Length: 209
Image (cartoon, rainbow, N blue to C red; front, side, top):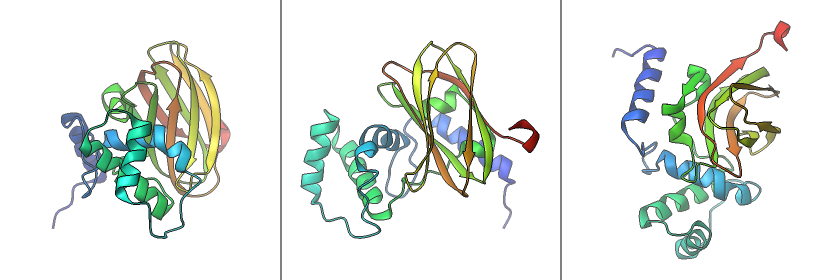
C-alpha cells in the first residue's frame, strides 16, 4: 500500500476543512463547530468534574435539558453532539480528539482559523497537537484592537499558561513553556469579537528563549 508523505496528508486535511463548513471529525458525527462550542462555553464548568474513566450516569434527557437551559436555542442534532462531548469529557477526562494540529503546519491563516471560532465570534478553541517539552512562542495577527484572554491547556485540563493580550494591529507575541509531552490546546476568549488573521506556533531554540 502506498502512503502519502506527511506534509501532503496535512494539505489534504486542511483542504477538507475549507471545503466542508461543519467538518465531521469522528465516527460519532461530531463537527468541529460543536467541539468549539463545547470547549469555549461548556467545558469551563466541567473540566474539573471528570469521573476518571467511569460510566457516565446522567440520563440523556436530563443532560439535554441542562444543555438547552445553558445553550439556548439549539437544534436536536447540536444537542446530541454536545451530549456526546460531555459524556466523553466525563468518562475520558480529556478533550475530544480532533485530527488537526497547528504544530504540524506551524501557521494557519484566517480561512482555517475560522473553523475554530465560536458562533459568537468571541472565542476560539484551537488544537495545537502533541508538543514536546521546551519553549514555544505564538505570533498572533488580529484584525481588530481586541483585548483577549489566552489559555494554553494540556489534555488533562492543566493550564500551562494564562495571559491577557491587547489585540493591537500587527503581531502580538506570547512565550510559554511545555514541561511534559502532551496534547495541548489554545483557548482565546474576549468580551467582543476576535478575528484572527494569522496564527503561528514556533518552537524556540535555546538561544531564543
